[in-house]
Structure formats: C-alpha cells, structure tokens
Length: 130
Image (cartoon, rainbow, N blue to C red; front, side, top):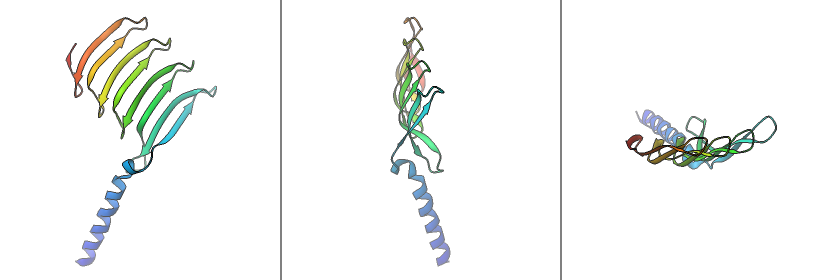
C-alpha cells in the first residue's frame, strides 16, 4: 500500500510539473519569412504541457509588400488585448479588444476606402449594441 501511495504521489508531482510549463518557460521569438526574405510573421511562443508551441505574447503579421497586416497580443494561446488589422493598401481594417479569446469592448471595422462599416459593443464574446 505504501509503495502504491508513493507511486501515485510521484505521478501527481510529474503531472503538475508538466502542466506548469507554459507559465514557467520564457517565451521565445519565432519569425517566418516570405520567399524574398522579407518578414511575414513574428510571434512569441511558449510550450504547453504537451510540448506544443502556443502563442504567448505579441504577434505581428506583414503583407508580402512589406505593409503591416495585423498586430495583437496572445496570452497562453488565446487572443488577449488590442488587435488591429489593416488592408494591403495600408488603410485600417478593424480594431477590437479580446479578453481571454473573446471580443470585449468596442469593435470597429472600416472599408478599404476608410468608411466605417461596423461599430459595435461586445461583452464576453457577445454583441450587446451597435
């Protein structure tokens, strides 16, 4: 019985240690490039408890023409914070805030020529007003 308890205690300790990897490991930067060598994606990642990379920190994406496509922040694999998107012509496309992966706050969207096409209020992933 005592051996069984020791084994279960060791197993539980190993599982709990594995579950904490995403919060104890420092994030590292991953960059992906377009065929011409220009920057396509720059993102911060950590390993989850399975050893798989998940977004954690800033993520930036560029069009092949070098203009910014989007910028945002992730927290433990979920969108968290302000996200901004642009059209390829440089015009702002959308701006919204996420909290733990859900839209929360004002969501603004513009057409490619700069006209407002959406202005809504969201709470906990659900639209509450427009």
